[in-house]
Length: 172
Image 1 (cartoon, rainbow, N blue to C red):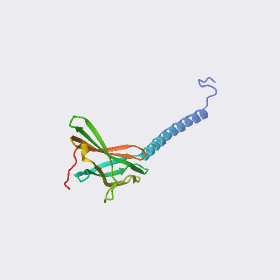
Image 2 (image 1 turned 90 degrees about the vertical axis):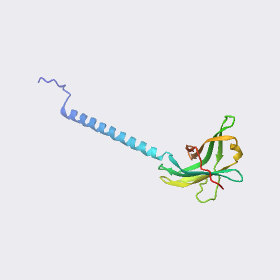
Image 3 (image 1 turned 90 degrees about the horizontal axis):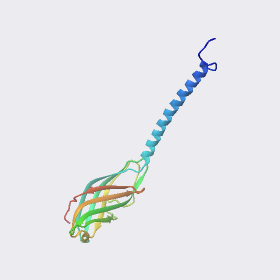
Image 4 (image 1 turned 60 degrees about the horizontal axis):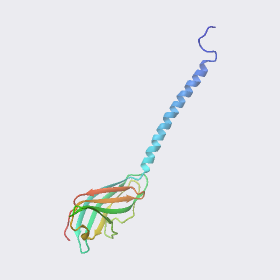
């Protein structure tokens, strides 16, 4: 018998080897899909708040200036989250061209619709309300206000901000 095939080669061995290669390749593809699915699920659990500014207003009072931000906060995550801090950052330029950033903490309020820190937001839920800030107006005397920034911090210390260059002034 004059054959070009090695004596140890036979068709059943080749068939089994080919089937093992096909099965291992299919297993590799399925494990890659499972990994991608697991990564997507993990990404959905990460904190992800979306802050939208609906309205703003400001008025002068006896003790200073009162500023209110009307917001909606959406939790796009699969896990609950909370807002642990709300601050108003006022960027202004002093008459001597010195830039200033004034930080004001949100006030606790019993008013209807007021949001008081901390605010729990369940998974895929939205919270509507107002943050209220009260500060001494003398702080911004002789300053040109450039912008107002509402800065929210969640339970994992991730920060979210919304800017407004002008706030409507209402009379008392």
